[in-house]
Image (cartoon, rainbow, N blue to C red):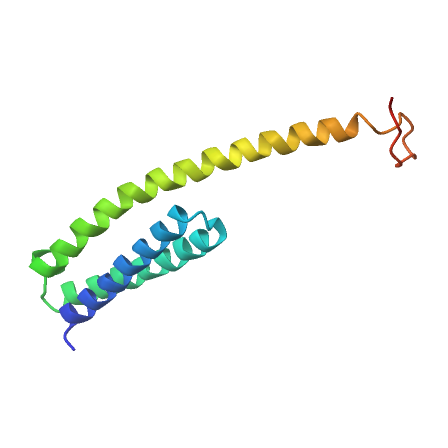
Length: 123
């Protein structure tokens, strides 16, 4: 397999991982999405290594039409991924606010004594 074919293969893997991360965010599986982002990052580094090898072999991966098409697809998916990540951040911030409010509410039922960890009954 030539260096250009290797670079194209690794770029296709990167594109799949971008789509995988995007799909996980869209279904609300945040833990899976962040794991997919990590795999996506690893695939990108693999691509950059293969791209360097292709350039050293005299091939220009960016001049290849199939790879150019893949980059266009990846670019569009990146924009969608940015939107999904921002939405996940907003949801997380909202959840943290709700958790803080719940903690304050629970703390109001504790007695004033430092060593006393039982709840008080309130009328």
